[in-house]
Image (tube, rainbow, N blue to C red):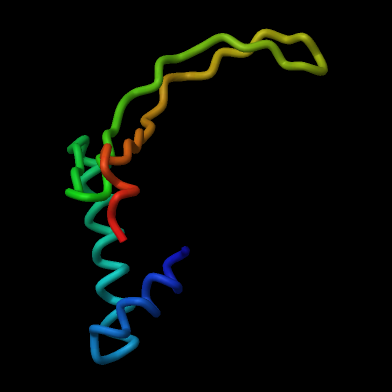
Length: 88
């Protein structure tokens, strides 16, 4: 399912397509904003989004054999709740 599919599902309970689209956009933007601030986002029944800093690492370019250093980056880890597949 993608954003469009989610919007279609919401249309069944929300009267207009534009309003359903705005709800989906708002939900996604608020999750992204919280993660950019470094906050943990937990949605009961779905899972937890956790931002973390992936440490820098040293790699070797496969063609040239040159050693490359990849700097530390901000990443997001998502974990499903234990009973996720029990919901219908």
